[in-house]
Amino acid sequence: MDLELKDKVIIVTGGSSGIGKGICLALAQEGAILFILGRNKENLIATVSQIENDGGQASYFIAELTDPEQCKNAVNTAINTYKRIDGLVNNAGINDSVGLENGNHADFVRSLHRNLTHYYLMAQNALPELKKSKGAIVNIGSKTSFTGQGGTSGYAAANGGRNALTREWAVELLPYSIRVNALIVAECYTPLYEKWIKTFENPEEKLSEITDKIPLENRMTTTTEIADMVSFLLSKKSSHTTGQLIFVDGGYTHLDRSL
Image (cartoon, rainbow, N blue to C red):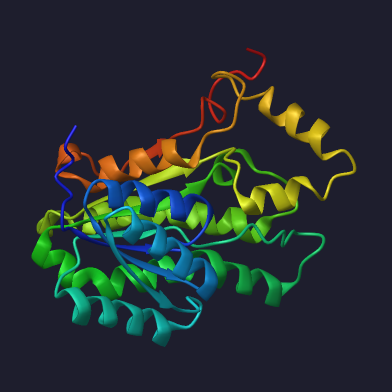
């Protein structure tokens, strides 16, 4: 299916590794032009090089997204470079384990800034161009806002905020035909996930315990499967879909795990 994304300029935050990188690679295959934000220069260069070597177009911008000015500068650079913005994927964040028992006020607020505030900042800065292009926003979220996880109040609260902003923006931006949706991730094996798994005494046993509870095929969701849905949501093929929280998780969040 041609998603008609050729030459569409898409900003992806946290796009140099894991889920974000998968999203960038999928969009590049559809002919989109990627403007990738991140903090790790080496990873950013590697991702852009991979896209270009495959015949795609991409550039990067190093930004600390907890800084409002850096968010603004990133978007302005994208506009100056490409003269338009057709889509925004808010993806950057980290499950930083700021819990109720093991955190404090400063840690909690910092977690919100790392995982939620920049979603607002990026959307606000990109909005004038998205109005012109009648573009789309996709927010990447987590099952933690629905299931809880324990020991991660900051991240769970931030993801609840992402869900709420998705619905709020979908309403506010109706007059401009800007669609806003969220993709909710459950168990997807990324470098950060691997790092977390390795904190357990028996990581392979823990991983097997998790995958056995994923109803569809008892396996992790791949970054490609997430990226393909993001591509669809950014495209005109989903032209009447907005305000939705879409789960790409093999049924993990909602199906009976005794299955």
